[in-house]
Image (cartoon, rainbow, N blue to C red; front, side, top):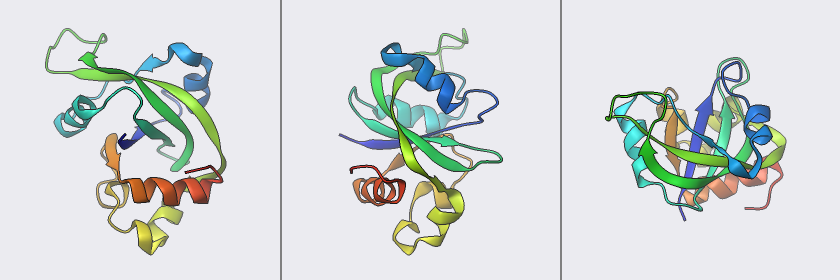
Length: 139
């Protein structure tokens, strides 16, 4: 299993929107960055991810699971763009902010710290466990 981080502006697609989709989940569509698209191409069913609210909140607010591997993005006719489907698993007990992550030396190499604009990014198993601990979740 691999771990990921999915960033979304809450005004566009929020954690509550994701939760409302239930087990059916939702396409993680609209990604128009080649590196982020390529990360989605690596994802497998059952991979886990953090759901991150960008903009004003800048915090991890929940965990998700990949439920469909990369396929054409239904929001465009341009065949360069693909997406995965994800479903919400659980909210965090305590939001983990970008400032907390940047302030934790153990997370200094995390992609979120070094390339915060990338909307889909990998998370190492060690980073996953540290953040789950900070969030009050089992790793």
